[in-house]
Length: 160
Image (cartoon, rainbow, N blue to C red; front, top):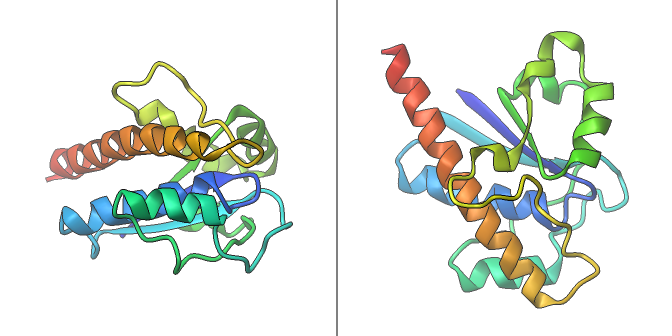
């Protein structure tokens, strides 16, 4: 099983959106038995809460379900149980680089490193903006998720 975790600050906007989008793509690819998907935040402010209603609405408009997700904070154990810990921005990446056990440091990457069409490296936090920000985040996340899935599928092919 390949573990994929998406991480942002509070785990109510960007990372649960990536979680829901990638989970849907994994299901459509028939890889649910091979890839597990989760998300977390670096901060504990929203633990136990559902994703932001604006993120949920934007995702639902594109056919993605987020209502089953609840915010959680990343733990030290997450570094050993996930092969990919994909962070939405450099600030949270720096936080996790300081937290990660050295032997798992190579599992940390910016999520948009996998994007194919965008030239930006960070997913902006839409929390304090309007609904357009959530649509933009979805555009970036869909691009990154497609690239990530292609990367994982290629890795699986290379191992055979």
